[in-house]
Each structure stands twice: as structure tokens, then as C-alpha cells.
Image 1 (cartoon, rainbow, N blue to C red):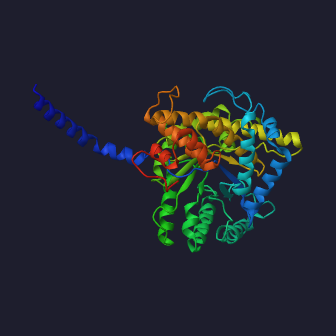
Image 2: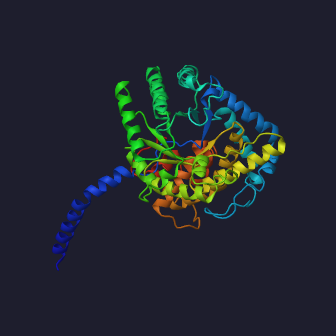
Image 3: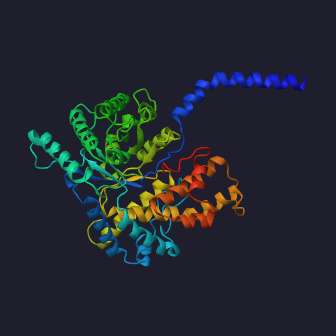
Amino acid sequence: MTAPDRVVLQARLCDAADARLAAADAELADRFPGLPTARQPVHTLYLPADRVHAGIVREVGAVALAAFDEHLPDPAALQRVFRAALVSGDAGGGDAGGGDLVAPADAPAIHALVRAKLEREPIEDLRIDFEDGFTQRGVPAALRDHDEDAHVDRVLAEVVTRPGDALPPFWGLRFGSFDPTTRRRGIRTFVRVVEGLAAAPDRDSLLAGFRPTLPKVTAVEQVHVMVALCRELETEYGLAERALRFEIQIETPQSICGPDGSALVARLIHAADGRCIGVHYGTYDYSAACGIAAEYQAMDHPAADHAKAVMQVAAAGTGVALSDGSTNRLPVGDAEAVRAGWRLHARLIDRSLRRGFYQGWDLHPAQLVSRYVATYAFYRRSVPAACARIAAYLGTGPDAGYLDEPATARALADFCVRALDCGAVTAEEITSRAGVDRADLAALTHPGTDHEESR
């Protein structure tokens, strides 16, 4: 075969392949756009709606800072408290203590950075809970609808539509599930909140950080209803298309495994029509539904690991963020009880981070201390190596001992961006080690596009 004939043949084969795969290519690009482009908070603090009031962010920060100063007065104390809190093994390693969470040499930096974080931005994501956390104790059943309406209106007036810094960067509400017994109440609360947001002078900025949570999902049809609800409210209140997005809470076995044995969580994500922000694991409802005794319900139970592994595969490449659940062992009581609570929480956080769950739930202000200590320690342990590998990949630094491919380089860059976003490292530290700035990291994370502004 002559060379011109080969060129013609190749062109004809390529054209045929393009035509045959065009629909699949378009579907893949639509369903799997890649890594999330927006900042992901490292945690979500759940607070019952009746406890949320004007100044709640400052109040929570003050409680966390007081606990930090009392029990971690200096870097040496921080290093001692979190001794032996590190999970052993590799990224999929075991659960036993494997060393000090905070290296002595890094303790001064982590101590200073965490304290500054608690002063500046103690809460990254606040979830105002009108579901399980909102028990309405002492309120007669006949008055509960009225009581919930009153709390919705109060929260809107005192916190949501209040000018100033009443809310953290991300916030939202968890309302009643679409189970038949709570469906109407949940929709009523969600509509009331959206109505208040739509009437706020700064509604666009409020909506930018708004993260409503759809809990206890058991069927794809519930996600379809949530999508239709969002579309209808956008039309009714003059909001931009897709201004309303939401999280899906994975806390029922039915959301992991459908009745036909399929991985239902993947269908839930794609049924959201691009409106799903994240999928959040619910530790205790899921564990209880699996028949696990209360004493053994935990984030690191094998049943939890299975559910989260399914979530992780289902969400991969979709741009949907993952969040782990919570521990109900709170750092309260005497000094040793507080420190033991922190060590357990930090171990679980480190375990989640190693497994690619970069967000989790917190239930008490004092848990913010262990949240940021564990998160910062995780990033600061690995950022130097990540930066060295980025520099070697780009050819701006010495050989780091790895042969990294483009997909790995994207993951390394995304890791460094996450470390910057939460405050674990400074931009100067990244530049000095990798020779790149934030724009360079964004270009590596999302090659061929400009996502810097969305961060």
C-alpha cells in the first residue's frame, strides 16, 4: 500500500470513529466533567435550628478558641495531645495508632495557623438543621409546624438576611426528608427559606454559598422531585437558572444498593441534572439501618467503608464533592476527656483524608480544634513531597524520584490547592517549594481551561 493510500485510509477510519463515538463523547463530557472547580470546605458544622442566632459564628469561634487556648497553650502541648493519633500504614492502611499526628518540627507552624483560623474563619460550612438535630423538645405535636415556621423566619431575619459577616463562606439547611411522613414539612421549610433568600438585597452572594441538604434519600424519584422543586422555585422567585443546587445525603442502604442490586448512588448523582454539589455520608442512620449495634456505629466500621467506597467510585469525575460523616464522641468534660475526644476525632479525620474524603461533619464547637489540627497536619506532611514532584514534572526542579503522569500531576496540583484553600499552607510556601503560583496549579488541575476565578 502506498503512503497516499494509507493517509486516505487513516482519515476515513478516523472520521468513521468520530461519527460513531460522537454521542458517547458528548455524554461522557456532560456526565463526567472532571474535578470540582470550586473550593470545597473541609467540614460542615451541623447545628440545630433553634441554636442558630445572630452572632452564632463568632460564638462558635469563641468556644473553639477557648478550648484551644486552655488545652493547647503552646506548640509542645499540641504535639503531646495529638501523639499517637496518626493512622498507621499507607493510604488504605489500618486503624491502629501509627505515630504522632503532628511532627515536633511542624508543631509551631500548625499551632499558629490553627489559632489564626479559629480567629478568622472558625466555620467554613454551616448547616442549619431542621431535620434530626431539630427535635423541638417540649413543643406539642400540634404546634410543631408553627414552631418550625417561627424558627425559619427567625433564622432568616437574624442570620441569613442580616448584613455583615453573620454567615460563613458556605451555609445551608437540612430539611425534612422526602419520606411520606416528613415530605410536606420539608418542602414547606425549603420553600420558606428560598422565599426569604429571593427577597434579600444581596441574594446573589447568599445563593453562591447556599447548600441545602436532601437527607435520607431512598429512591431516584426523590432526586427528580428535588430537581423539579428547584426549577419551579427559580421560576417563581425570579432566580437564575441553576441558582439552586443541593447535596444528597447518603444515610440509607437503599441509596447505596438499589432493589435490583445496582449501585443506586451513581443514578442519584446523575438524576440531579448537574445540580448535585456533593454526596455526604451519614454515619449513624446508615449504620443503624444496617443493623449495627450502637456501640459499634462509627466512621471506620467496615459497613461505612463499603458505602463510602461505592460513593467514591460513583462520584469520580462528576465534579461532585465527597464528605465523610461525623463522630458523636464529643471533646467535652475534664481535660483528659477533651484530649481523648480530640485524638479520636483527629484519627478519623486523618483516615478520611488519606482515603480521599476531604470534608466531614462536625457536631460541636470544640471539634473544630481537632478538625483543623488534623487537616493542617495532613497537608503539611505531604505538601513538600507534592511540590517536589510538581517541580520535577514541570522540569523546574530536581528529580523527585517519581515518574508522574498527567493524571497524577493533576492530583498533586489539586492537593496543593486544597491545602491553600483551607489555610494549611501559604502561597509563599508553595511557590518556594514548587516554583509555581496558584494560577499554575489551576492550569495543571484543569488543563486547557481557566478556573481560577471559580476557586
